[in-house]
Structure formats: structure tokens, C-alpha cells
Image 1: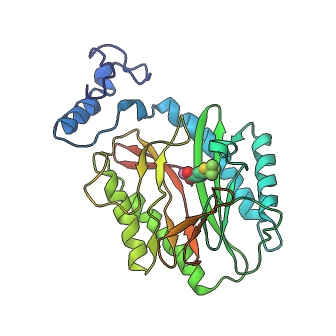
Image 2: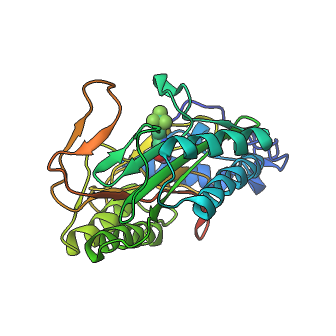
Length: 294
Ligand code: MF3
Ligand code: CO
């Protein structure tokens, strides 16, 4: 096939490890992939598709990942520092036989990313960053358990948040839901980003262009890159078994960003406006998608 990976005989076991005969498993999907490839579509290799066993592993990882975020949601309030959150994360993970995917990833020095107000992403936890009434914060959590990766993030509003901040947080959340609704097997990945961006633009906000979602499962960041400013009908074909994140960063002002020169990590809005992000992880199914982590 186009991906140069072996094609089993029709009565041989499927390449995915399901134990089923190829003709009763991936044969039809593979034929469709090959046809679309021949038509000139962008079709990613089958090695990225997750088997039923992989999905079980990802779900077990995601249970921990979401457990951390639930814990944070129950305890976060004014007066808490983002380093407190980092400590909660480390304790929760070690209590659940899991580790942070963030820690040491490309040299990232903490177990979680915390992004307050104008921080777009990759915010460092710090004893000095103490949450105040009116702040908005994204807590981005990524877990490795038994070799499987999960990744999701949520916004938290601290105390009395201004109407405009709340609108930003809610719009970003709605844009993720619109992206999910655009996930259709054999559709295009570009439809997802287009749906996300449309919601944010209609609300007068701008979607960050430099960062996006990603494939995930056996690695933290796999193909494809998921843009949230993409065009309908473009990009890779969505094949059942593809697992990726939807995680737009949405700025109240302009979409432009800056990266902290001292540490090379912390991303902020260039104009100092607020930024929000929600992240979910999903797998494409025969009839749409299944949420794995949120
Ligand atoms: N959690 C981020 C994501 O959603 C990645 C963070 S990488 C880190 O993809 F190194 F900053 F942790
Ligand atoms: Co992610």
C-alpha cells in the first residue's frame, strides 16, 4: 500500500493485532485509504491508527489524566499558587502509578502547564504566581500510564471573573465542541480547525496560529499537526482509529504571540490580551468520534 507497510492475505490475521481475519477487520478501511491516496488525498500511514487494545490503554491513562483535572477543579481557588498545582499533580500521578508526559519533554522542567490570563500556553508553575480573584487559568495535563499517553486541559475561573473573560472562556469551549462536531470519518482534518476558528472569529476573538493539536497515543506528539485556522476540505483524511487532540488557544485581542526569551517556553499574547484554551483527546470512529480525555 501507499504507506509501504505489509498487507495481509484476506484470511490472515489483521495487521492491527485484533486477532481477527484481515477481511473482517481493516481490509475495507485499508482499501478506502488506498483509493483516497490514489485520488491525491493526504492519507497518513496506518501505523498511526490505534487498535482496540491501544484505545483501552489510552483510556486507562486518560482516567488518571482526568482525575488530576477533577482534583484541581475541586481545590483551585484564590490564594493557591501554580506550584501548589504542580505538587498536587505529582502526588496524584504517583498515587496512581502514572507519570507526567510534560516533565522533561524537550526539556520542559515541570509536571504540568499553568497559563494565567495573558499566558497562552506552556506556563511554568511558580511559588510566585498566586491566583487572585478574577483570574482565568488553563491547567494543561498530560499523563503516561503503561506506555500510553493522554492529554487534556481545562479553564478555571477564580472567584468573580469579568463578563469579558467569562465570554472568552466560554467561546473557546464552544469552539472545541464545534470542532468535535466536524470530526467525520473519511472527512478532512481541515474541517475541524475551520469549525473551531469560525466560532472564535464570530465572537470577535482570534485563534493562535503557531500552536495546534496533535496525534497522540503511543507518543506524546504524533502526526498529524492539528491547525485551528485551517480551511474546509483540506489536510489529512480522518480515518477511524486516528487519535488526536483539539486544543485551540484563543486570544481576546490579536492572535500574535511571544515566547519568553529567558526560558524559551512561556507563550504570551503579544498585545497583553487574555487567552483561553480547552483541550480534548478523541479517536475517530466509524460514525464520528469517541472522546477519550477532556
Ligand atoms: N500539554 C501540551 C499539549 O497539549 C504540551 C505541553 S509540552 C510541555 O500538547 F513540554 F510544555 F509540557
Ligand atoms: Co496536547
